[in-house]
Image (cartoon, rainbow, N blue to C red):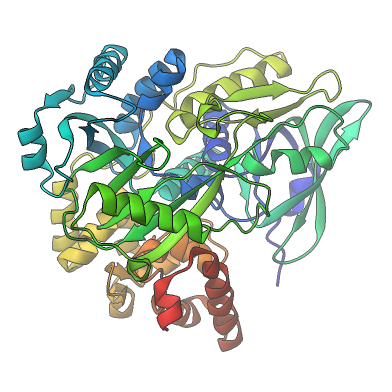
Length: 542
């Protein structure tokens, strides 16, 4: 296999090297490239393959952070929510949430009302509607499936949902690349280049085609999420431990009796911890847990105890649900890259981000700790400001809060109509393309051209078509079948977790991308092995 690494990589002087292509890393790359810096972004797996993919997929102010008096974080989050609704309207959309209040809840009606008022005050510049308090009867009319015993009423308010957080990171990476950034996935950083107490770049390995390389950069930033300490271990860092991540697990199920049409924000009976039941991806997403974690960061799985906890809590609040373990389509788990805290309640650990300057021990080197999906853009702006200060250059103003992402679609309805008219697609396929790619769905049609095989559906349950496989590899930096299914086409998070569609996608790659049968078989096997960590029901049934 020929090397993917540009020949001039070792002779280029980058302004900034970024380690990690999650939402924060891709956001930093976009901001820096848009401001004119020469950027290199490296990632040992794929874009958004870590924590970014495994959140509850909410773009929210963090209502519960008010309990911990993190007023500044809530205000920052609400402000950023508005910016994301503007720059990524195809991916970030308003979401109504209902908070039922029961007799004996830790958070009673008065406290919920107070939180709602504070939330509205802190989002004074919002485009979304304010909250409403509901009587018991109104709550049951809105969510008939709720347990009626002990119900005192409810509150309804609005936040945002990013159905495909992976695509949000991918589009940040695409924008960064469009502005000149060099992005290398499946590329592992082996060590930092150190000269006279200063970090001068990175040494890395191409995990696909082999070979080791050195790239020089004036500033390097470690945005590896839960792996931040592993990067630091590579330079024999003797400072304090940075990350104390906690594990959050979710279950995904089909529609069920009593399922709410709006998201539920519920207090768990077992431990009074809030969790969500969210309509998502035409399925239901239920989570999350919050437990300390000491296992492998490269294979994080939901424990059976976590799965049973989420099932039991859902059945308690919605008695008609009657969910069982066999109804769980798949699970997913991720590690929050929170600041290390030896003791204390997991939920009380701050979600605020920190940009750590390692000087004077390591000059020209930063690490990012913590943060939320919602605030990635502001974190990125702050990080690039810090880079400019380190470079002793005047920073141009950030444009990321005003410049829409590549797929931003002005009108979803108009886009659907155009996909129907120009593509001759079924409603399911047109809807899928619009939701996943926004206006870039037209690029999919462009690649399909007049080839009917590329307009054929390869995933009947999602409506994904063959040309998407080409788009992923040729225009969206995918390198493996898993990249295509899980973080480009989003087929891998459908009801069957991509099982069946994986074989069809590999066949498309054989016909149109030159794969041989051996590679197709290997890619499918590796995809299914990777997916075992998510307990997919379809894989057990295959």
